[in-house]
Image 1 (spheres, rainbow, N blue to C red):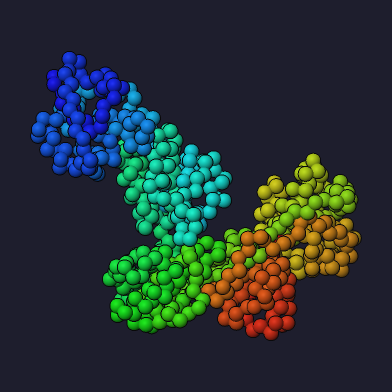
Image 2 (image 1 turned 135 degrees about the vertical axis):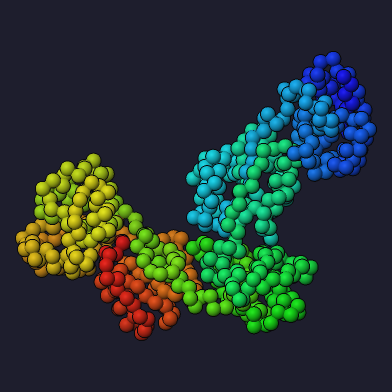
Length: 571
C-alpha cells in the first residue's frame, strides 16, 4: 500500500523511523516537502486529500483551528527544541489511518490534564463543589489577581501567580498559555483558577483553544461571575418584571471605543477607572441623568462596599470606589435596598444570627487563650476543693477543657463536682466533652441562673467561674450574695481581630451585638459613630447594659431590642 505524506517541516531521521514503525506492513511511504509560510485552513486540507495526500506532518501552530473531532491525529511528536509547538501527523484519508499502529513516543501518552475553573468573586463559600474538588486534587494551580492565595495555601498544590492588573506586574497571555501546556507536558494535573467565570471576560476560551489545539485533555468549569455576586450583595435584580427585561455585561475599561450594548440594565466590568467617562458617554447616548447607578467593590467579601449614585452624580462625585469594582446601571438599582435587610453581625459564631435578611459577618472579638500562671495551675490541680463549676459561655467551656487537657488531666477529675450551665449553647458545648448538663437558667441569663440557684438553696459552696481576663459582671456578685465563695479562673482574653473590616454603616439595615466586648470594639473601630437609622439587636442583658451606657453618653436614639432567648454572649 502506498501512503503519501506531505510534510511542512524538514523531516529528521528520527521522525522517519517513528513513522515507519507505525505504518502497516509492506507499505511504501511517499514523502513530499512543502515550504509553507502561512497557516493551513481546513478547506486546504480537503484539497490535499483530493490530490491524493493521505497524511500531513505539520507544526501545530501552522494549522488554523484544527477540527479535532473530524480529523484524526495519528500522533503528536516532539519538534526538536520547540517544545511548545509539537508536530502533528494528521490523517486526511480515514481508511489509511485506521490501519496504523500506535506511536510509542506519542506526546499525548505523557500529557497530564488541565481544568480551567472559575473561583467566583473571591469568597470561597461561593466555590462550586467541582472546583473545590479540583483544588484539592491539583498538582499545580495557576491563579490570577482576583484570588486570595491564603485560601489556596492549605492545599498540596504548587501555586503559581499569573495575574494581570492595570498598573501592576502582569503575565502575558501567551506566557500563561505556554506555562499551562508545559505543565501538562510534564504529566501534571493542572488547575487554572480564574476569578469569576472563565468565559465571562476571563479569556478562558483562548486558553482552552490553545490547549485543545495541542490535543491536551482540557475542561472548563463555570464559576459565579462578579455581576451575580454584586447583585446578591446589594439585592439589586438584574432583571425585573415591568422594569428590566434585558441585561448586558460589558467591559468598562475603554469608555471611548467600546461598543455600548442595548439593554435595560448594564453591568460594567473593570470600569472603576472610567466611571466619569462612562457617565458622560451614557448621557450623550440618551440615558437620563437621573438613572440610578450602583458601584460595588469586592462583592461577596467581608470588605465589600457599595455606593449609589445617579449617572449625573457620577460626573461630579469625588468619592468614587476604586478597583476592583463594577457598575450596575438601570432602573432596577433604585429602591432595591428599601426592602432588603442586610445585617452587620459582630459575634464570633454567625450560626446565632436569627434575623430576617442577609448577614455580613464581621467579628469584633477574637478569643486568644492566656498562658496559665502558677495560681491557675494550682486551681486546676486542686479542683476537688470546689463544690461547683459554673460555665457562663461556650468559649469558657472550650478554654477550660483545653487547659485541663494541657496539664495532662481529664474529665475524671470532675467526679463529685457539680457542673452548672447558664444556657442552651453552653450546654451544647459541654456535650462536646461527653457531659450532659441541662441549662440552669430558663432564659439563658446570668440573673436567671442566680435566681435558679437561689431557689435551690445553693449556699456555703466554693464555686469556680472559668471566664476571660475581663472577668464576669453579674455572676460573681450574685453568687456571693447567695452566700457562696467565688473564684474566677481567667483563661482567655478578648481582643480586636487583626482582619476586622471598617464597613460603611450606611449600607446596613441593622447591627447585632453579641457581647460587651463586641460593643466596645465596635465603637472604637467606628469612632463612636452609629447612624440613627440603624436597627440594633442585642444578645445578653449585660451586653445591653454596656450598649445603653454608650447610647446615653453619645446621645444616640437608635431603637435596640434584647433577644428573648439564647441570651448568653459568645465571648
